[in-house]
Image (cartoon, rainbow, N blue to C red; front, side, top):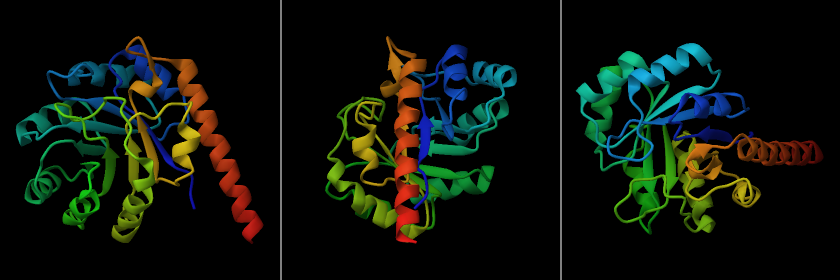
Length: 225
């Protein structure tokens, strides 16, 4: 068992990025969906990245983007992962991967048929994010789903040989609870914010919880050996 990935998403200012980059998170996310509260212009993100130079992998979040929209963002931002939050089809995912040669993660909105929906994308995507299903929103709501369903999502992701992150309502105060279900990673936006800005104290508290979890699984591994 490996330590979970940690994605700090929704960075919308240079200060947000600075706080997120100054952590042991593995991924940093940016929302390129116009009309959403965390939308950022790609040219600004490119400028911030040039100045801050984070060590984490960069994730761009999109909803049913055109190839032209992706080209504009990738011109400014060297994304490591394209994350799709909408109703994209398998063929659209494959088209994006063929055109850009960038790994694609697909968001699954938790539902009774969520695992079946994951299975549709077997071999097409490079990872999954499971988020809460909230009417009128694609993500970033701060609403959690029933975490008892996490093991079924993890089992399907393991079967496909790809990572699976859990999103929706995770904070430093409940991170230990979700980590007890052994997700492949956790994905947070509002859970690391105060007054719509990244909060360094919340980020540090979150990473302490992840570190404590990593220490506990390392100890369990040694005990088994």
